[in-house]
Length: 318
View: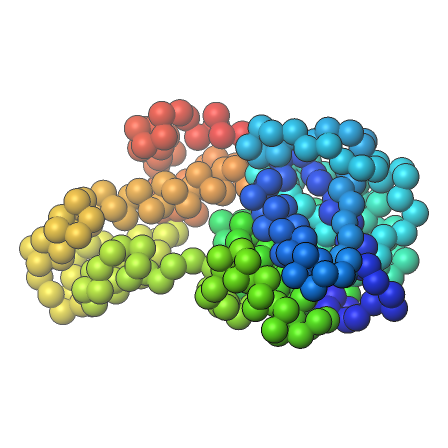
């Protein structure tokens, strides 16, 4: 299991870079390992970068990283971390899935970073396991893989599978690894080296609270937005929201204009359009079904609103 002490050191961790991987997410995992070696004055960890073809792999930042090996050159990993980024479903190949299945069959601990849970789930090695990924992709991935238990946590360790949701969560996961294997003192010293002084638990939320996102603690505003987020497919009418909050429509309008510089209707519509964009980019559902799932009963109205907000037709997201 991820976190168990290896039979000998250094522990070799293989990072499988999928085109479009998050460079930030990769370095968030590598730097804690580097600092653990430096701070302990021992080579506790060693790492290698691998890819399907070997050679250069382009990240989501359009920067190319040289990998050490291709998957053809790797017989068995000690620990494998699959690293992905934007549109993981477009990066799946038979060779990639075959390699992941092979490593799972050999009993290797397999990790998923950022959106790579889609790829490991596609390989069929995540059924019956808990896993996490970036919050934007959880709903679509859970729908595509009903036998995988998707959770919205920073990182998850479930037997021989582990995962983190991307970006800074890689630091949290690797500090947990260091603390488990070598003690909390070393993990704290590594965190200090990284100027990462706020310890986060693995089940801490991925997103800021609604109050932080809205930059307001007004209970009526927060509850109104919560209701909107929970009712996308069948949108509530603004008078219904006001009645639920026991305030007037005029007061609700005032709150939205004061704190969000928007009207309740416009804010609600933009929430639904943002959800539609995520679904268009991450699922194969038809434009019509997505428009209905986001509360637009007219496809033409949905298309007009979408083009006005994003400057392109919904079909252009495919």
